[in-house]
Structures are given as structure tokens and as C-alpha cells.
Image (cartoon, rainbow, N blue to C red):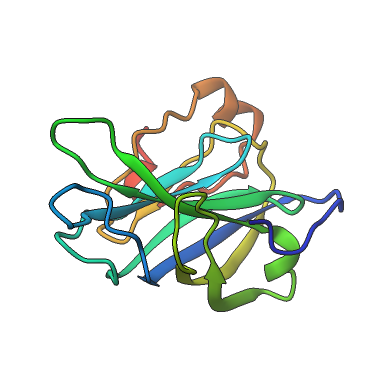
Amino acid sequence: MIVGSSDAKAPAQELEVTVKSAQGLREASHAGTTDPYCVVEVLGSQSRFQTKTLQRTVNPVWEETGTLIVARNGVVKVTIYDFDNALQDEVLGSVEIPSTSFADGSFEGRLPLQDAQAKGQASLQVGLRVLRNVQAPNSGSTARSSEGSAAALAVPPTLLQAFPDLALPPCLDSV
């Protein structure tokens, strides 16, 4: 589901995203359990982070925060998956949040999840806060989870040379 829309052209922003909780997820396995985790990403970019996987719950509480670089006309997508050891992880639902939703500097709310297989309405509680404006392209960005570890995203040296004012998170200063 897309919340709002935007076509403004402006610099990028460093965005703090807090994945708080979800409610009403469907039971994805035959055993009647769900082991959910979230992938938070900027569409059209490599900027992303992932929450930890929680065990056997349809009402998970993550309270995890990550930092992304998003263009002011960008879209943040949160997808909830069910972890499965034997098979491919299954999508439980997703929501797309355009930058107009946090144009005033922040957004916090419970959003309905898109899930074609859901019997009821599942939702995601999320908070977004603009930390600062940055001059950066839409791809090759970095992300950091609340644990402070760098996500598996590379920042090419040529990009760093092209954008000398780009401030990297402390964990990536030596990249």
C-alpha cells in the first residue's frame, strides 16, 4: 500500500526509521506459527536494513531503528517476511511510505499492510524522522541498524570522491 505521493525534486535526507511492531500477521507455516522479520529499504536504491527475526508470534514487537539515505521524492518500503529454515522466506505483508509522509520532519503511525493472502487486516507501527539533509545520489547509499553494525552495502570510492561533503555514519568512516 502506498501512503501519499510525491514528485518534488530535492536533495536526499538521512532518515531514521524505527520499526516498532506489527499486529494481526497471518500464521504462515503449517505448524501454525510465524517467525517474522522486516526488511526496510528505499525503492530504487541499495539503502536498506533488516530487523531481527522473532519466534512464533503474529503480533511481533521489534522496536528496532536503522538509518537510511532517501531522496526527498523517494519511497521507503517495509516488507515483513516469515523466516523458514527449509523453504524460501514468505512475504507476510508490506507498506510503501513516500517522502511526503515525513515532509514535515517526522511521521509516526500504524499503517495497514498489503497482503493478498490475509484473512484480516494486519498492520505495522512505524516511526520515521529526518535527521539531516545530505547531497547524495539515490543508489550506493549506506544503512546502519540500531545495533550500530554496517549493513552489507558498499560505498564505491569514486562516489566518495564525487561527494566529499557526504558524511558517513561512524561505522563506515574507514570504508
